[in-house]
Image (cartoon, rainbow, N blue to C red; front, side, top):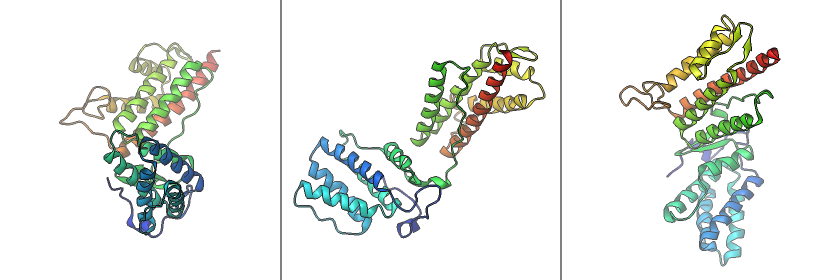
Length: 292
């Protein structure tokens, strides 16, 4: 698989902004070298080092020549990777292509996939994300909407579940699995709504056991407020994503009229739901404090 990106980046990578766009820092190079060393435990160490060396030689425009022994192969690979790191897009392309070609050549081996590459890039604030077959700039991607920490009124077990579900949704997005990413966070929205069951409002106790029942009663008891309007939007998004002729993430997709979510649409919906969750958690805390 060939990684596609703006051809001008091969000559001049974008300037640094919120992220490191021009080059790959030494810390990230060291982590990728450590990955390659672990891959090499599955076969000929020198052969694996030479395989990656060939790709990084191409990235810097030099001829690949086999090293005299394993030690020199490791030293040469390190030098070529550090040289290639001066142009971040070319470095990432060389690493990704080397991993993919090795995976195809030795399918029984475990070779780092693009989520593992993205994790290291993100850790070191490198401004690119691999979404095969495309290399995207993170500055140009939609930002992730942060979600407030669940308030102390929720049980510790629920807090842990909440964070794991948010992380899982983001992980699925990075793996280019848009429907599953939206499904995970939609499930979280439905789960979070149960926290309002039995909560006291000025108009009485919230009734219902399921998402639609709880939201309907909470709206009735909050008529004319911002909470009422937000719950209206939540219901609309939930209904569209649940419907077979909409997003089809809960009840299957209508093959004739359904909407197959794209990665960009999935990011939109996950960010919308994250925003709603953040607001609802604060409202839950307010109502809980009022009740006590």
